[in-house]
Amino acid sequence: MIMERIAIRLFLGCVISIFFCQAVFAHGGVVQEDDLCVIKVNYLRAHFKIYQPRVSGHKQFCEDLPLASESVFVMEYQHDALKGMPIDFRIIRDVTGKGRFARMEDVEEIDDLDSATVFYQEAVIEPDVFTVMHEFAEEGEFIGIVSATQPDTSKVYAAVFPFEVGFTGIGYWPFFIAVLVLLQLQYLVMSGRLKRWAKGRWPRAASGLLLFALLILPTAPVFAEDAELRVSYSTPAGPPEINRIHSWILHLESADGVPIENARVEVIGGMPKHDHGLPTQPRVTEELGNGDYRLDGMRFHMRGYWEITVTVVTAERSSVVVIPLQL
Image (cartoon, rainbow, N blue to C red; front, side, top):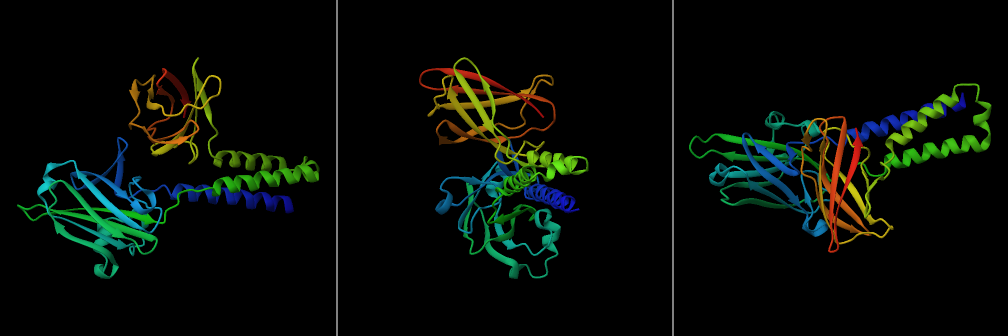
């Protein structure tokens, strides 16, 4: 009975952690297209990005922000119509109770919008780039509201994007849970209890728990190489999921194991059997040192066999490696 209770508790812990991990990936009204953040104000579109210069330098965010700090919101118009439209910008505390699923209809039902407002920029016409700055005093859940008014008809177009300040993402909780599961299995083996349960149901439970642990561990590095170059990658946020933007960490080294630094890295991909490429345009955004490069904007929109082509250009040579990937 004791062993069964332990198994059940560990199983429930794994399930809860997986549910939590899925929940934090929900997105608001800002979408990512072709590796760019885009906000849709009705049919009008603009590139959207947020900076926190004091804590993150030039790093760009789409919605969620890691810290309560000075934040700069930037919209670069894709439609020329926005250049002549008065645009106002409001940030409110999320009092709708809808979280990531809050929409304009939920905002309109708020009785006292002013009391929920933490920042408001009156409508202005910005012919080039719309920029506002706000310093968050505390972390929490917020809703951004962008409104653009058509000068001729006075019609108002609005976009709503829920976001979180103090967002940390998945973090290492799945990893810690997996470690606890493995430690428990090791204890059972070393103490001899596992052997005594060999004729019972525990071996099946242990196998199931080990499978869950492996599923939630960060993806191990995968290797591909040619005569001059070896490329490995890992996905820190867990195995790639269909239709989820995620990042890779590429590790580049020569055939004799020397890390390759200061390289120009280009990545494309596709499904040979379907004759189409990736739905995004991933790019290397940061060199991390010791041959490691951060690749952002990876997304797979269907299951099947993919090939990811990595081109590495250095002062000495240009090499191409193809990484096979089955989803």
